[in-house]
Image (cartoon, rainbow, N blue to C red; front, side, top):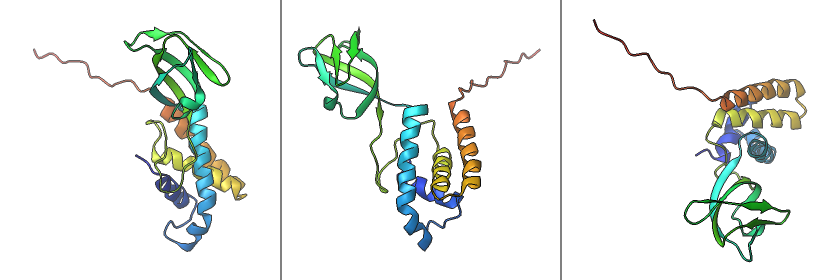
Length: 176
């Protein structure tokens, strides 16, 4: 599991800051803000964080405040036996058929501190996250040319992470 601190240190190294030096400690608040921004961007725009959660409906509705995470999109609702149930997502609640249901949904990550684990899709590596944080850091410190370079690396790495790779197989050989 990748920690926020690891992402911050990797991004700092990319932009020329020594993670063990004095300059790093003064830049930590900016790097932390950039890390939270990139984590949020990745979850909302590219690779959603998905959770399945058992919930109990009261009078056919589940308030979004009852969810353990802040839901941003409901994918499906299942009954106790695994059968798919109908649902209607409203602004403040989810209308469901049944009392006890399992809800599969995408959620927005909450802001993290330096010592916490980062929430990324399994497809996101430390390198991809560090490129994003480095690009955002350079942009916020007005180093625009470098920011553009890292932003390109970040977007290219995102495209590579999004590609579904086929399993390579080798055709069987015959012995004569």
